[in-house]
Length: 319
Image (tube, rainbow, N blue to C red; front, side, top):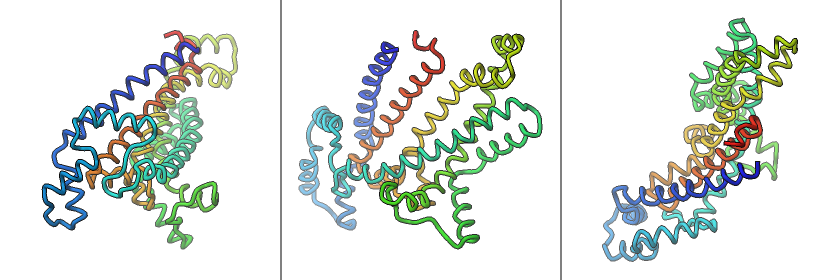
């Protein structure tokens, strides 16, 4: 097991290095000059002399060779220093930190909701295949796939306003400071996102259980007289969880920076909204840090998935 963990950990290093190289150099291939865009925005569209633009490029280190810029940026990123935002002038790490807690909490809450719904519902749907229970659960999951999370968010807000004459708080409060105020704001976007998330996982769980129940070792367990409940819980569930774990993990990583529209609906100042603002303002330093951050989350989540695979199926440890 230790060898397996070490091997997977070492594989993360070239992956993250490759992501850093691609992010840095591909942004440099984009048309336009971010310094000129920034200065023109600050000056209200007035003409800016070349001397001022060159002086600002020198201040930001953009006049140096690309390989020098890359190594300076990458060395700083390893220490948690992503430079300063070209738009706000604040440290990039600070701009991300004040929003990351919100995005992480929504992602965790949505994932917990999806797991609590998907595992039992997907299992019940497979066990009672083609019965009314299966039909109801399939309708529930199909509706979750068909309804966009931002539209469901708007419906939730309208219902809260019309029925209870109340809307969620508009200002983010940390869970540590005031748990009730925090949950009263974030439970609703987590519910809107988690419903769709659970629908995907439910269908995957159902398909996986149905496939595993056709395996020979399941027939053998039944032939030996093992109770159906134990057959499903001990033999089928463990193997059926492998593809479901993958879906849940990748969806969680996506939620960190992919809730742009949902954040707009609930007025959440999260990572997704920061991403859009950075792209609109051509804030290179911010975009670099955000893309690298999301990539790191995807790599780490894949590492956790590999560990769960090895736990659920010990045979994987030897590959």
